[in-house]
Image (cartoon, rainbow, N blue to C red; front, side):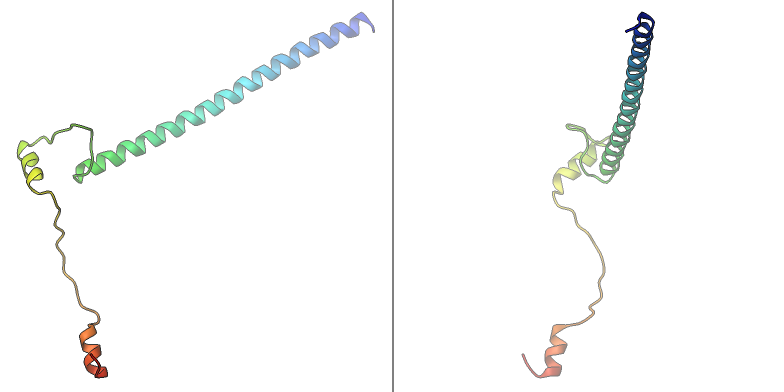
Length: 103
């Protein structure tokens, strides 16, 4: 093989290897960037969920105390939550029984 063609092949091989390493590093940076963005979005969603749940009286940080000490004592006294509401009876089983004549 001609020494000039060997030298040309070696130079081309070094250029190809450097290009492959550069391209691989670029792809690694892109994947790393996408991973960091996904992690930041997930972290923000969890932070926002905990913030909203804390406002609603749900879980918060471990050992966190309310700003108002009277809220802590009221929360300790009321272990259950009461939900008030109104309702309308759509159908009553008793009226159906009376119409059909059965009990």
